[in-house]
Amino acid sequence: MADDASAALKLAKENEKQINLLWKNFAKLEKTQNEWEKLQQDYIQRIEKNLIDAINDANKQLVAYSKSIDEHEKAQAKYIREVEANLVKAVNDLRKWVDKEFDRKGFFS
Image (tube, rainbow, N blue to C red; front, side, top):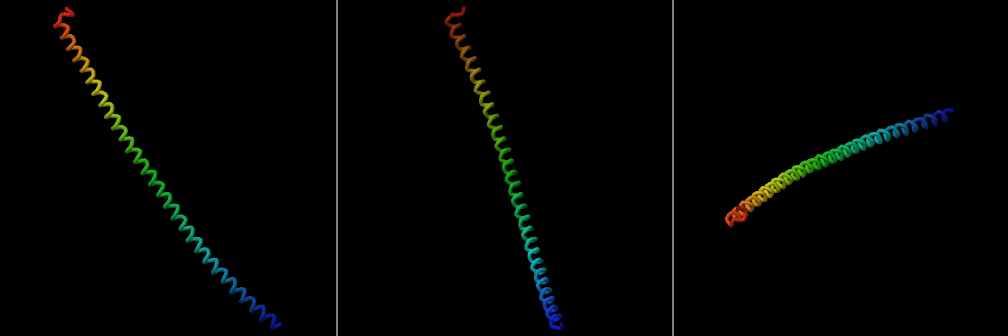
């Protein structure tokens, strides 16, 4: 019986060592999992920041392109107005010249 008790005590101590080792390994795994989750969160935050920065950069470029297009359209409208004004002036000058020439030669009198 003493041998059985001694063997049972030895087995219990060995089981206790194994349980302690399992708890130690569990703690290591839990720590590793926490570190891994932190790394994942850091990675996700970096990706989110990069995406937000990319969207902001794209929006800035769109605004700049929009301003450039507006400036171009304004310049184009100004040019068209100037050309139209020059054409009107040229037609009026031509009309005056024709009137003068015909008046001088007596076509309309």
